[in-house]
Image 1 (tube, one colour):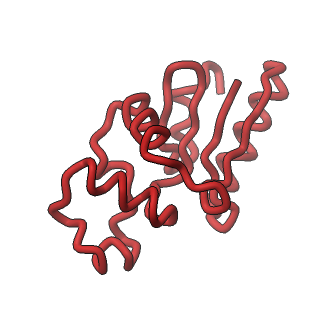
Image 2 (image 1 turned 90 degrees about the horizontal axis):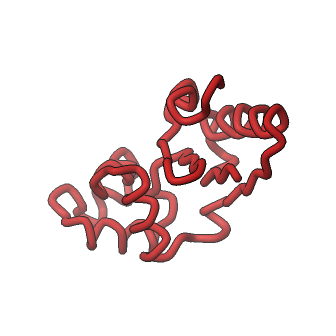
Length: 119
């Protein structure tokens, strides 16, 4: 199964979704689309994503969003950042694609080639 954490308002996320759906059709795989703005992730889900990605929480957060500065997250620790993302889903970096036990922040969407064999 391929899972994409998606924001339909984002052109890069839409492009990644097209690539994921194309790959899934070619390989007869199901796709789960999680619109995280409508269905925010909880702390457990965010921690799992962080672990799959192998990154710190600062890599999960969109530092260019005004909420990032408004919440004073520049020096925040991982727990504080994950709580902020859970409370303000727009702070989550996008799109994130999970395939098996691996994940990637597909920004730009061309990075999907690192996750999806023969993409």
